[in-house]
Length: 261
Image (tube, rainbow, N blue to C red; front, top):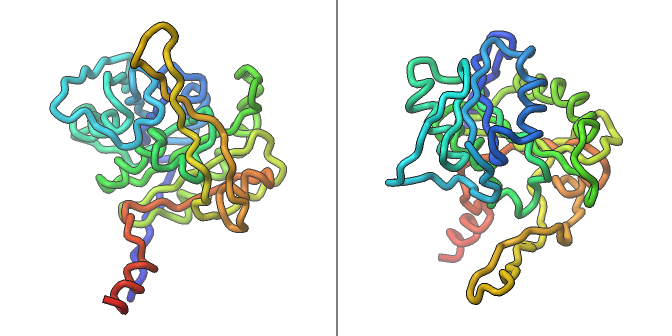
């Protein structure tokens, strides 16, 4: 069986769309825009008007959204991260679609089980589903410490080279990449890795003096450190690069079941 051709992206001439899940005014998004603007041919922004962490690839089906113009090639959308990608492709960029979609930089890792909930990853997957190469960027931070300009120093230093290598190598059809930065990069060479295993730590906290009302929270949990996984890469202080796919078929089980059934 022939391997599908990979699609490379020439960044200096590329039309690039930025989005995220933390909202258009998020600090990580400003850092991404700062890094990417001088690297590409034409930059577009279409991001959520407010934060939607944990939205995965949810869309506002049969619900009204507003596309707000915020400047030249800059839009905020009153919807989820995936809505912003669809609004860009179907509305604001329909006559000249992007060559590449970049989502992030998420304030917090998206590794292990986080990938199924992440709006940052959901936006990238939505782009890939529409045939546009995409990368989702996420960065760890030291728990309990405020986010300050120096929080992003390692990301600023390493992201351009990481993105350049990904775009040179190329994207599979309907494929994307997830890139995670540790809070302190200990090795400049990134690691290609698969999705690791981690415990789902979502939990509800009751709202005080409001019977029957709760707020869902997320916290770090136990993560497998099996070699070759995104969780192990981060633990080792390495930037993890994970190829992502739309295909959720369990191929091992498919073959086993075919033999048994």
